[in-house]
Image (cartoon, rainbow, N blue to C red; front, side, top):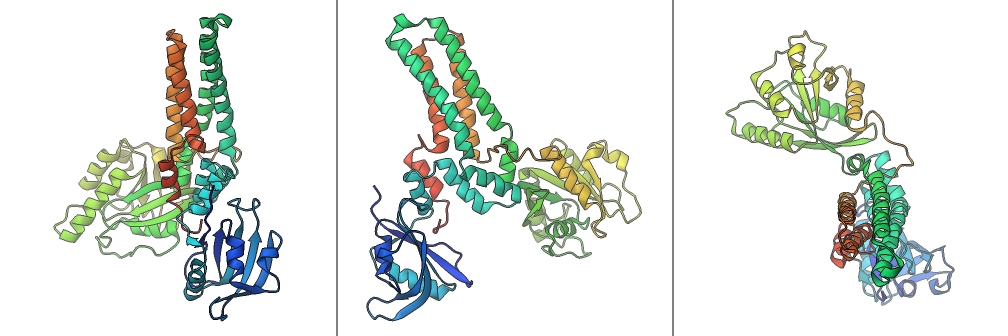
Length: 458
């Protein structure tokens, strides 16, 4: 049972209209009441009510801050404990003074993610829902936000639990067969195991079907913009980001380092990397930038290779085309407003026509074609139905694949007439692996690691 009371700032630190401090635990209402002066005692207040007043220094009686205090009594709160939220004027000094007073009471500062962790430990949410909370906060597109929200609502859990139930039935069936062999025959048990294993594996396959898209929505596509100097890489970054993020000049070699920027295209988050122009150079600083560009190419999920419509293919570009021919690539032929010297036929020897986009970044032409090409490359032109469960968390994807392998082992063992007490090990393992997704069988170390990624006030 959790017996201590915690507090943390739940809003961003800095100047703002308001700041919110959250307090949770069995003593939260009583401890805050000792600092609060209003028309009514907080101890006597009804749940889910808001009270105007002041926070005072209990030693001097001095008014420290004008506040609104919200009371939420257990179990009707996020943590299922008594929760108090103090809304004050936003500002570093104001919030610091309030936190100092609270920590002088029988209250300690919360650990990262401890409010959500308490909601999990108290049974209000499962582990996958808790992870959905942090995905919700970190969402970089409307679609990613919607996916995370459905996870917070428990949609993934509701699909995992029926699969677990099938596995429990399998284990029970096997145990009955082991304990009372006269009431069953080996062939019937074998058929039952194979049938149920297939049923669960099909359910897992359905969840994994959009795992790649889900991972992209959650983490974004690492996209390297590469090419020779002065082909328009930085201009393209600025256009996609709708901001002058990178310096643009007519001088080759202006970009010396990798510049990062997050953008969203057709609900697909991209982590854009504007790289130094790739060319042979004796400039020491530029040479470092070129090496970083080559590293970015190797690490990227998507490569946008920018070529100049007004120049023939350079030897550096031909080498780069050879290097990336087996990767996810979109060729951007920029500066279409200038006379063509680029051999498009030769270019199509390396990449098909549908991978080549012609545009003029300067005139803002062809941007829609690039956005369409990215959507087609990763989502076949459109995202799946809004009702579909996207498994976006790498941990969840790995555990689903492990559970499927365990069931494949159980199926094969049953086919090979392996003793069913050995088959039961694989079935139980699959149940545990699915349970680790929602927290039924997750070790404490994993739980601590997950919640350590949260901010203090969440």
